[in-house]
Amino acid sequence: SSLLSIAANRSTYPTLKKEHLMIFHLTNFILDVDVERTRAFYSLPEVPTTSEGCTCEDCQNFDKAILTVPATVTEFLQSLGIDPQKPIEAFSVTGEHEPDGTILYNGWYHVCGKVIEWPKFKQTENHLSYSWEDCHRPDPSFHFDIIAVPTIDLAREQMPTPIIQLDFDTYLPYVLQN
Image 1 (tube, rainbow, N blue to C red):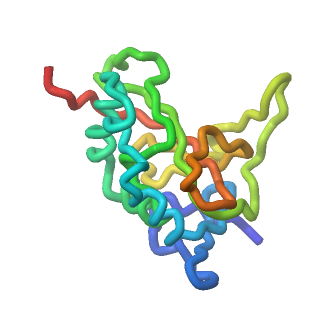
Image 2 (image 1 turned 30 degrees about the vertical axis):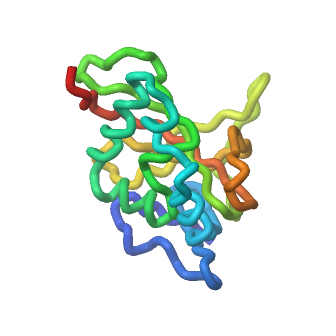
Image 3 (image 1 turned 90 degrees about the vertical axis):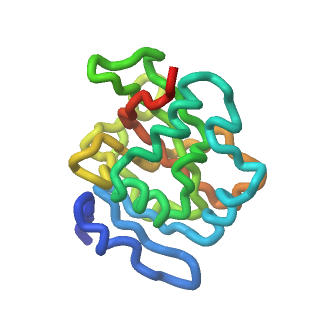
């Protein structure tokens, strides 16, 4: 079966599978996600937004700046059951602003489910690496790349299993008032 690149066509995902499980055909990988259990996890009050979990300037900015992404990105994350303001981890890669005033953030979200088909990984000396071409970009006009990875970092005990970790990479504006 061929994989679907659905970056610009939201109507191709998700497809209903069983009760709450949904199949997501992403750029170079396929996920089977329990959206309702994922959504229930992110709705828990003990799962903090980035600004509730950390007081550093970068986290405070992420919490507000993630609200400025295009609706297609927000809708994509929400279709998986993810609250965009509640990544498991988010951090500024360089700690500095880019020339255009944005900040490069990396991080990850967790969803309840299984990976049906993995992206292509390359084994390097100490870890697996992937090409950005294997990442999914929900909106081709905005840099927000996401990919399923074979690690589970900082899993919260309230997160239902099995867990999929989705790493992201994005440039967000600096929106805090000085």
